[in-house]
Length: 362
Image 1 (cartoon, rainbow, N blue to C red):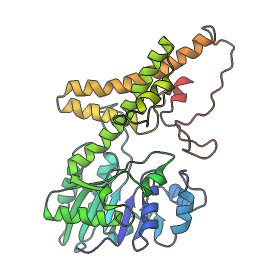
Image 2 (cartoon, rainbow, N blue to C red):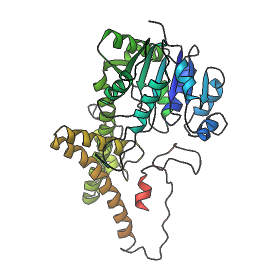
Image 3 (tube, rainbow, N blue to C red):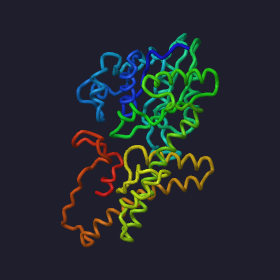
Image 4 (cartoon, helix red, strand yellow):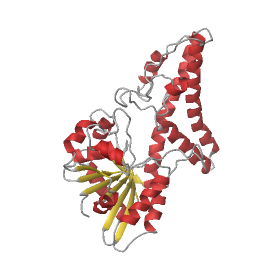
């Protein structure tokens, strides 16, 4: 099987942009084109004022842009020229219809799959389509069905799952030195060849032992599970903070004590007002909906409690502020230092405020 020489990324947002910038930097022999329908967003990627902020991202873009890294609105041309196409589109929580408030809305993933199927021309041979967006289990099957029912002579598709594990504020470091890279695909000869081809791209800078291959469904579920476990950890230490305040214990000291246990570790044990950002709540609610659909109500209830406690922590913090101000905030001025959900998510006054706890406190 011939190696990957051209990559197209559908979606120039937080996932697609940084991921493909690092791929271009680490794989100078591969042409990487990031495309998006938004003229304004692509113009920003081609300027000195990037549409997203990550420490170190600007330097990577300036190093590679115009060489083997390109940003364009010519989506059809990029798809035609690519050996591999990443789907990096938004998967927000549904706001209406079946699964409202919990299920992931896959309309953009479906549109991307249909665009690929419509654009690829006869005789173009093998195309590897990779879902990078956070999706529910079996989403790859939907993509495969769309591509298969619109197949053209002389064209074959292989659909892979390659979830991202980026944390805002450290995305470049996460991409350069990942804990693991997951690649899921079909357990057929063609599927294994596609997995190997994508793996070869990552092997330009990621050690082989950190590249984990598995079946598609395991890869898709692993992303949701990882975010659910991290959010659960935050809610766990926050629940202990409530006990500490009631007993006179110091939650930071308790966190250090349990973090010294090698089975637990120290990460994500800083008590706070609760988790925010665009991923944790969305992914947990998606997991809750999947569990409900699989007739696993106990599992759904377990994970929904993580979100419930996060909401309780915000309410509890607000209540504490009022109590400390003699149970009234009438005619009093309250200042919030910082409105982003975490540090290093944007330039001054442009931090990421999605689901920020500060919004709920205010």
